Image (cartoon, rainbow, N blue to C red; front, side, top):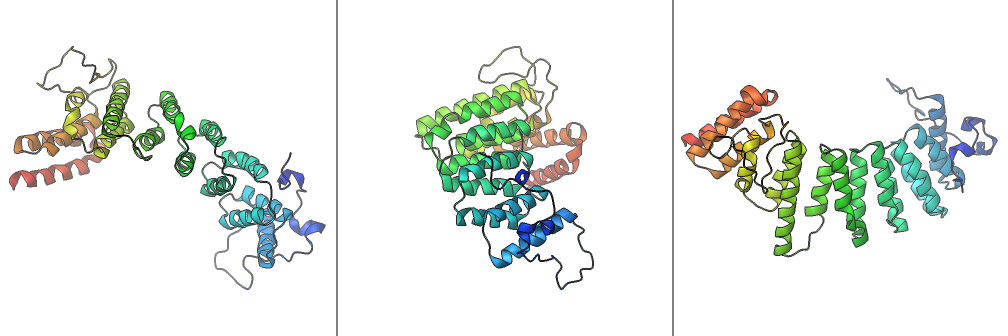
Length: 340
């Protein structure tokens, strides 16, 4: 069933040329004004928005208003007023929301990076109360742009708002599949953290401990495959910070990636709890050097702080020169603490 509001069902003529719109008085944007730097809209957009202002003035809400707002949205998907008035019209005329959602399936993919598209979809879902089909739709949308902020944000809203066990059930498998496709997808790492730690975890301490161990193992394995991946290192930090665990807990794991082992030598021994870098890894890894320096600093003590300073200096001079000024700042601050 085609949407009664679909632009494809209407003439391409300007609204000013359509007999069925003669009863509406268009209102120009710059009525009674003479702007110094007017915006030169296309004739089609100017015509549609002039009639939209006329409709808003009279308060009309009808099928043709849906057609008009769709035309404007297709020309400018960020037109907040058109979206808001469209939503009010849908409610006023009791339009079928399943038809509206079908139209949104198209518009959301066409305008993935437009906030208003996703906001409108949220409003519709709050009315329908049927989130079931949405996860499949979102998954398909992510095939177009796997890192799109609005798509991921909408998925998190959906899960949190409805908080249905069936929605949560396959979420770890989903995000794992996304990371298999692209282990550097920062949006996917962020979503995993949301699912595991920020979704209202209700497990007891024993279960939480098991989850932390699982996630530590998961991120370590991913780092071992692709060491120079800031997203994974940030996830490792997130696990420790969220659960108030000391960074020193992963020191043995971090050292080989920073180019050192505990005693400063290399080793062929494999620690299953601390998977070593892959054979083709480009080491040392700057993220690991930074992590190891933070471990030293957090442990405290003059010797440890001096070791951190040495690592920051290596980042400033060789491994991360783009942030040279930042590392020099860290060194200065650390030297102050040593002298005090």
